[in-house]
Amino acid sequence: MAFVVEKFQRSERQVCKLLEVDRSSYRYEPRPRDDGRIREEMVALAKQKPRYGYRRLGVLLARRGWKMNHKRLYRLYREEHLAVRRLKRKRLVRPAMPVAELTRANQEWAMDFVMDGLATGRAVRALTVVDEYTRECLAIEVDSCLSSRRVTRVLEWAIQQRGKPEALRCDNGPEFTSRHFLAWCEEQQIRLIHIQPGRPMQNGRVESFNGRLRDECLNANWFPTLGEAKRKIEQWREEYNRERPHSSLGYRTPEEFARDARFWDAPSGASQTPCLAVVV
Image (cartoon, rainbow, N blue to C red):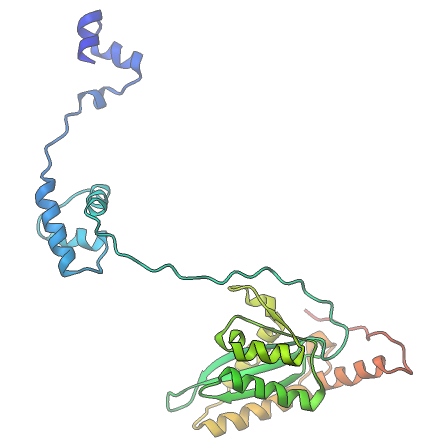
């Protein structure tokens, strides 16, 4: 720039304008920086605190009198290879499953877990199984630990009561993705539908049921023991199926709707499902 000013006898303002350079940038003179001392301090602190990131190290350096811009701090941090290594979480990728049009009972069951606690502070889990067409709650298994083998035993009990479902819809929990559970479904010739991770509304009917269970039973009762929790939850399940009007079933109970549905599906009757008065 100085050479152009001297050779063509032009002012600094004219040359900066022609080259489209800001005059303050041309006049800027970098200040000497003692990066060596800062690097030594940063490396020493990183050895003492190996899990600290560059921002926390920057705070410690500022306490020692080394104040700097965060961009310069990050540049030195990377140049010294001090970045904290973090393992990337493996996320399961599943394609979206098409929603089937449900026309009869046992066409598709939905399952999920609900967490709660006893008066002693002990955590308990509840496995809920719901028929997605009739909205009947087929089983609620309550215990402090529910393995995949316990899940299959509950399903076998429900199958003995009302027959085998064509499909099971569930999330990607370890109980529903274990080798035992997958082999059991294949042996029983039951189609397994796993929802996409982070999309609980793909299993919306059982999520809605779990909300009713928590609101009307878990939050309304005090469970001093595990046995008391099992008794009260089973009592609520029977009340839900037999007495509680369901808005999406035209304010009929799930058992009433299931009875009506069986009537329409009988060979002597019309082969169609009854019209539902859906209330939002």
